[in-house]
Each structure stands twice: as C-alpha cells, then as structure tokens.
Amino acid sequence: MVKYVYVDVLFATNLAVNYLLLLAAGKLIGKSVSVRRLLIASVAGAVYATSAVFLRLSAAYSLPARIAFGLFMVAISFPGQRPQSFAIAAAAFYLCSAIVAGTAMALQGYSVSILSHAPGEPSGGDVHWWVMVGSLAVLAAFPVMARAGGFQPGRPLPLLGFELEVAGRRLGLTGLVDTGNNLRDPVTGLPVVVVDWEPLRRIMPRDVASFFTSTWDRVPEHLSRTPMGRRLRLVPYESVAGRRGILPAFKPDHIVILEKDGNRITRDAIVGVFKERLSPSGQYQALLHPDLLSL
Image 1: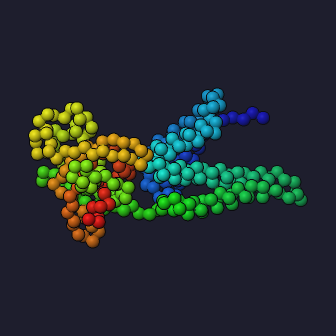
Image 2: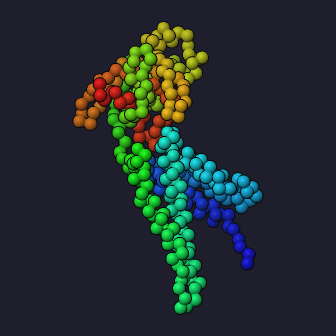
Image 3: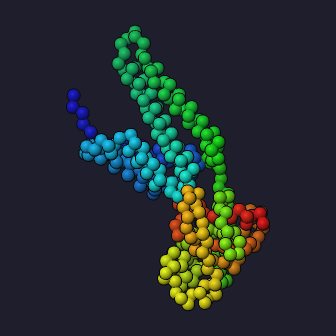
C-alpha cells in the first residue's frame, strides 16, 4: 500500500497545533501572550516538522533535537523570562504537548479496537485509557506544582501608575512592583526604577540619547557641564542569571506614585534606562523598586 504525504496539509496541521499548544501553555501559567510571537514560533515549528520530509538528517529530528527546538519556540513566544519563569513556561508547553499526544493515542486506540474487533469478542478499547487519565491528572496537578515553585497562575500583576518629571516635562507610566529589584545608586543610595527607553525619548533631551543607548564613547564632551549631564549616572547590576553589567541612569526632578486609593506620593529615586521592552505585551514600562512603596 502506497502512502502519500501532503506537505501543505502537514504544514497547516503543525502550524495550528503549535499555535494552540503555545496559547494553552500561556493560559495555563497566566502569562499574557503576543499573537505575533505565537505565529512566528508556530511557523518555525511547522517549517521544522515539514523539513523532515525532505531532509534525511536523523540527528536533526532526534528526541533531544525536538526538545531543544521546543525550547526555542517557548523562548520566542515568552521572551525576557527569568530562568525559573522560563522553566515553568517550558514545562507548561511540554505538559500540554504530552496531554494532546496522550489523548490522541487513547482515542486512536479506542477507534481502532472498535472498528477492527470481531463480533462477540472484547474490544480491548481500554488499552490506552490510563494514558488519558494520567494526562488529565497531571494537568489538574500542574497549578499546585506551580504554586509550590513560587508561581501563581492567573494572579494579577502588581501594577501601579506613576509619573516622573524631568526639567518640567512630565511622563505617565505603568510600573510592575518587582520584589527582585534591589538596585540602588552607589553614590546616593537611592532606589532605582528601571524604565523602557522608548517612552522616555519623548521627554529626554536629544543630546543625551547616545548615553542611554550605551554608546558612551559618543557622548558630547560639553554634556557633563549641562544641567542634564550632571544628573547622569552609571549603576552596576547583576541579573538573576548572574549576568553583570552597567545600567545608564539619571536623577529625575521627582517621581510620583499614584496609589489605587487616589493618593499621590512623591519619592526620590534614580531612573535606570533599559534599551529593550520590559513587557513584550506592553502591560508595563517600568520595574518599580519595592522600597518606593514602603518608605
């Protein structure tokens, strides 16, 4: 019997399954997802699966290679994650994949046994029942395991509105209260608020743009003699993954925290500038130092 593989059907099927798996993983762990990123990751996965029809490279499609490519898809779909969050996202993706595969095996076992058994004989359709039950049991237990690891699926992010003012120009932003942010200015000891560069462009003088994009060798010499130049800082940091670096920063006129009850609290802080988006979905544009709420 000759079997045919329709590449277009194979590609479309993998694209749809990849998208649904990544979407389900995001919903399971309570992460906001970007449709564009999910599509990019799903297309990449579909291309990888379809290429197996043409390329005879067994090593490229071995189990370790498929696991590695799955991690690549998770990294595209949920960027900027800390190691623990990335591990949870990857576990959710593979869990959803296992549930889909297990359920498909169970349904296939039932359908084959029902269609092929002779009248009067036991169907044997219970061969794969434990696969489906086990998969659903693990799915039900995953939120408990995630909470045990310090992650609470679906929990609203601790977001607060705040304003910062520089040379009389005011900018309203949304910040995530980050308990892992312990940055302080080494000179003044003030807490550091990390902010996306993109929204800051609207209120910052043009001659300091090169400083905040980390091309410090191109900073004009006269900048140090200007009022804005005297506000500039360099703050050393170390990430959770152990990466060390220098964060360009500045001292704003002041920062006003907008509490949920309507109160406006003025704080002194340093603003560290991050070149990339802190939140891929755009939910927030800054990481607030927790001490700004407890001072």
